[in-house]
Image 1 (tube, rainbow, N blue to C red):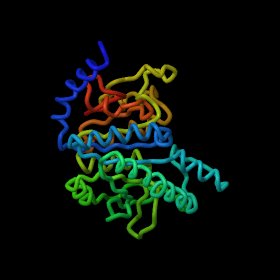
Image 2: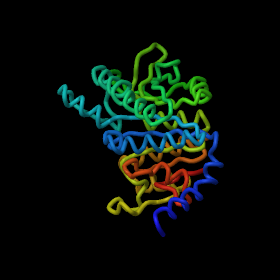
Image 3: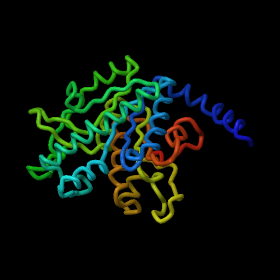
Image 4: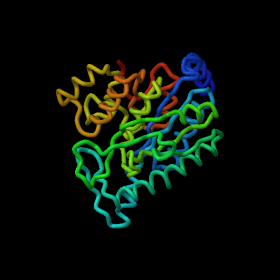
Length: 285
């Protein structure tokens, strides 16, 4: 089939999905290596703007681990993790907030604005959209947090103004003390509060793999029960466990479906949204 015929085929295939998702909410987490590669970032943002252009209400939650690590390395600060989460003392938190709410968020907002949509950058401090608390079990000087409360009236107002909220994962507690929240966790909590149609975690792998040694052994669909069983039986290990747990958490609280897909794959966001085949691993109730 010639290229123009393929384009027509894919456009035709997209129509029922455009109709299905019009005025629905997608909450998308974007981070990792896909965030640091400029050409890939531009491609992802174009796809995001396309979703917005067909009246899909999008929220972009972003991380920035690799760039935080680069900055910590520059200042000679030790990088440490505990149970898969960054250990965050006061100095590390200041650097993380500078990188997340400054450098990365400004870049993403600018890319969206230059691509034809309108975006606004936020973190938990703005209108108290996220109130944090210290992660249970963390040391007293560890500024890693979790979500205590969400106040998302502002997000709905931004939707009405056709603005894309771009949210970094820094949030204050009730006393105004800042904490660093895992971006996947924040994405799941926001998606659940908004009763999102889709929660999408854009990561550095193609999805949940049947065999970690075989990148093409993607499990295309998992029910919550199947995901829990695979975690319990240790068929799934490492960094994929917290991502799956975020998906389970979001769906159990009202998200229709959660997707783990590779942000390094060109147009993976559009393939997931507008084609029958989809992309990555879909987790459902």
